Image 1 (spheres, one colour):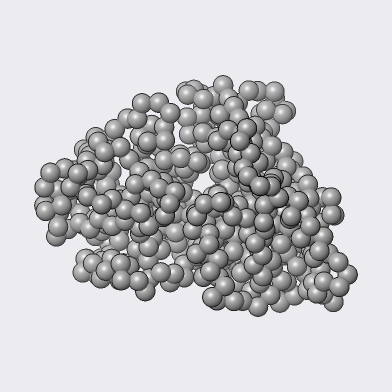
Image 2 (tube, rainbow, N blue to C red):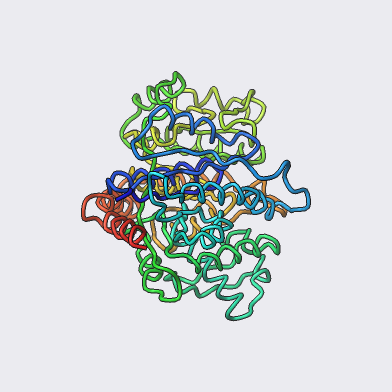
Length: 474
């Protein structure tokens, strides 16, 4: 009998691609009768996808194929706004995806196409799969909380006839069946409340309900209430919590810059360093940078600060003159206790025993990495679903301290950006670094559970086995 071929269609962002590849690797490792093909969709500008694809090609795996999908049009659609342009970009690849799937379903093809796993933002491909009678599953690289909110807002719109855009800048508290606590409207992802963006998310949620299953990069012991609520909801497809899917390989750790960072950490006491890193777009107004600097200086803790301007050109871009953006004399006064870097090897840093706290933008991948390595977080969300993640970590799970939970302190905010005073930042840094705190104990406990979930007979291991069996059977 032919191997079952499972096609993965990740969104073109590096983060989405990496963690879908990690899931695909688990499929191959778990079942020798499964082969995987990853369809690569690339933006016309560099997002780090090309370098990651090269690294995959340098380490080939059996039953694992990478296939780049060319677009089906000559240029991006100019009539779309920010929120709908991405959807149009994905739709521009539909024809070539359909052609490739059809080619793989020919009688002489060496494997049998058993299913399509599509990224949460690639729902255009669901219709292709339905047309070709291929079972489809949606993969969310975000947590159960985000998936829950999207499904709930769609139910409010379609079944209760509410206009969810009215919740923008609202003080309302929402009763969401997948959350223990009421969810403030102010922590809903901005895209869900924007007129155009909400239509995109509602479309996605409707398409989710047409699939054979919803796969989430989380584990039951982390988001217990949300995962159990989703799994027992008979109005949605079956839910599979199969995480954490993490890339904790060495990566670029052999380069001189990384070696220098790790050497600096080696010289610091156990759990003494606070690490600040805010993702690819983690830029702040200059006034805020000065407040952060003062907070770090006065906190008394050694710090490693990934400080970078926003740039679409390269994820390695860094400031050229720190003296211009930081308080006078700051670099000299903190030369023995602090280190400012550009790009950060986040996994290598979080896994280092000297790191005791993580000030983060609360991207879901960063949350899972902090949990995996048992590093408590202080939340500073910036965009996307990060403020919802921050709310969940602080209020729902009790696993983080909050520097802030909203977007009003970032350069992407549409209103007047609010600056957080250095004394507030300092107090939160002290809190997240506190020895023996309840939060530190909770994070340490969940660290062990994250590893148990992925081990044999763990919750995610069992869910993964069930998922693979269901795909092959369907």
